[in-house]
Image (cartoon, rainbow, N blue to C red):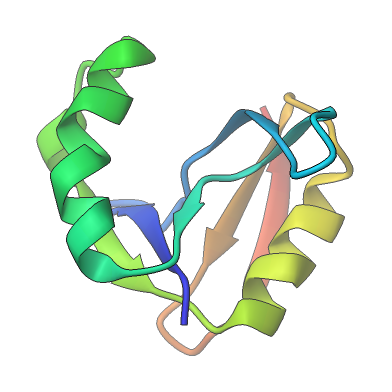
Length: 95
């Protein structure tokens, strides 16, 4: 299962500009294939994006289908924010 960054206080998943395997830019949820890679890269990744509250972002496991659904719901729109509740419910809000 993929690993993502989830804000401990709000349950928001970290989304940003990314590049897919076809080298196309898109706005989506940042994920890693394994937990060790996520742990190693988390701090540098957030620092590189100027995130001031980096300790508030925790590594969380997310089912691949939920990750795909989150990206669909973001609609490639940076003004959208995606949240996954404790019960797995996905919701999107405009910034």
